[in-house]
Amino acid sequence: MLVNNLLRFFFCLIIVSCQGDSPTGNSEKNNADSGNEPTTPTETTGDFVMGADLSYVNQILDYGGTFRDSSKVENPYKIFRDYGTDVARFRLWQNPEWTTELYEGFDSPIYNGLEDITEAIRESKEHGMAVNLDFHYSDTWADPSKQNIPEAWRDITSMDALKDSVYDYTKETLEHLDQQGLMPEYVQIGNETNCGLMYSNAPQEFPSLNVCDDNWANAGEVINSGIQAVRDVASNTRIILHVAQPENVSWWFDNMMTTGNVTDFDIIGFSYYTPWSEVPLNQISNRVSDFRDAFDKEVMIVEAAYPWTMDHADNYNNIFGQNALVNGYPATKEGQRNFMIELTKEIMDGGGTGLMYWEPAWITSNMKTQWGTGSAWENNSLFDFDGNVHMGIEYMDYDYESD
Image 1 (cartoon, helix red, strand yellow):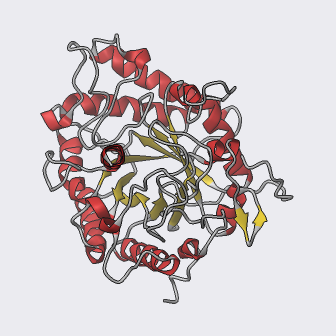
Image 2 (spheres, helix red, strand yellow):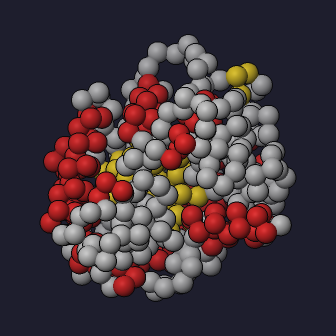
């Protein structure tokens, strides 16, 4: 029980938000041939974007996961495109060697590093999806509870050197993709940066980027370096800044755009997870509208999810339990579908321009994380325990215009 509780606590930290309107509080290739010719990535500008974070897909399929549509084994990238996904989202860690070390005795690739996400982006674009590349600026998970500086940058002690490192790394990554015709249509400069970025486990001399300690100017300089790198490689790529939970959007963007002097970005992105937000579903439209009016930027929810069951497919404890449920939306496939439809309507009603589901393909398999084997998210996925895509995914191609 202690181990189970620790696992549940840790995963809460992964996505947890700084609760309230102040900077304090708590807050994972399918080789099946689709038989289709590559298609042109979807044009997203001016349309509502349906996105899916598919960062674990390559790893799941390397370790025995199988995706099906109507019981037929199918390429998961094709499944998502067929059911209405416009944008595939991928997290990028700088040097995640630890991901191969999880598979002791196996010749495993490094996952969520540049080589892995290059192939994932290629697969996504070949199936007609645009891409959102999420720079974590870390070797591991970056979220409201931690923003660990990459090991390669730990000896940096000056702001100028840090800014140069962020600029060079971002630019070289995008140039690598651009040379292969794989330029992302969206780039996130940081992931859930509620309290800043690259501020923990660093030497005392390291310039503090912890905005919860009021270091907005330093963080802003570094974020602007990443933004400039994107602009210098691809002026048409749209830049997203991302915090967790709607409660934290106003104070963060107000401070970052004024004291931090960060204004050259396109989209306000935030996570919305019901266990860790006090904002009711029916108030999301008001929040989105307020953010648009206050900051004159587009607004997207770039991470969200909802359970379709409270059961388990494996022995890896699920992150979402009963505390994730909203009245009127039971943990059923239909309940998941209806919640996601309503959330989409709320975003649209507020003038928002997109919704991205976090790890909807994280089904059970022999894939490993630091904390377990299988999936801690299978009850939030858009697939049943046999790997069949289920009705939960229907929110993506729902006819919102005639509703």
